[in-house]
Amino acid sequence: MDERIKVYDEKMTKTYNNLLGEFATVRAGRANPGVLNKIRVDYYGTPTPLQQVGNITVPEPRVLQIQPWESSLVKKIEKAILTSDIGINPSNDGRVIRLVFPELTEERRKDLVKDVRKKGEAGKVAIRNIRRDANDYLKKLGKTDVSEDEIKDLEDQIQKLTDKYIKDIDKATEEKSKEILTV
Image 1 (tube, rainbow, N blue to C red):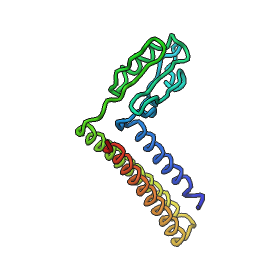
Image 2: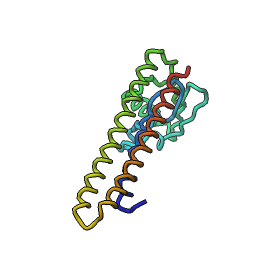
Image 3: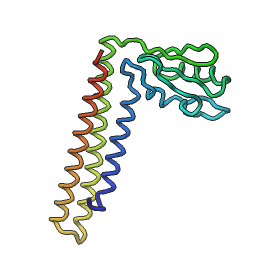
Image 4: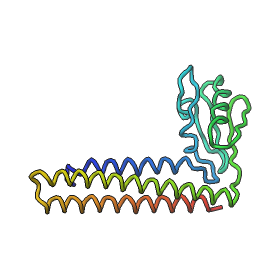
């Protein structure tokens, strides 16, 4: 790959990986530790990712269990989960916190699929914006001493990258939608 367009490939890769990370936080009826990725716990005055203050396990398909490394954190973790937007009430026995994921209704599943598709569409728009930036860069490059054939070749490479990432996003969106709709 040409060095001049490597930067745009890296941007597209980051956009795609970011989208996959967003998909991981979408609740799909079964317990997935990824839904806790954005939750921060007040740990001695510092907002700390939940994964760094306790051990997260999946003892049953629809249950997440959080075992804090310090028992004083149980209440703080519980508060952080309650103030987050995951919509699950934690229960604790003083040592561990359990999150029981209710079975999703069909209507809720359809809403989640719409949300996933919206995120997929936003990811594709971001990829196309990167393509536009790359093409703008190539137009400026064309005004220097680079041949038209070389510019055309670079534009083709950018378009192939764009097509590849759009296809990958469509595939990931479809897989996540299927996962959500599977009962």
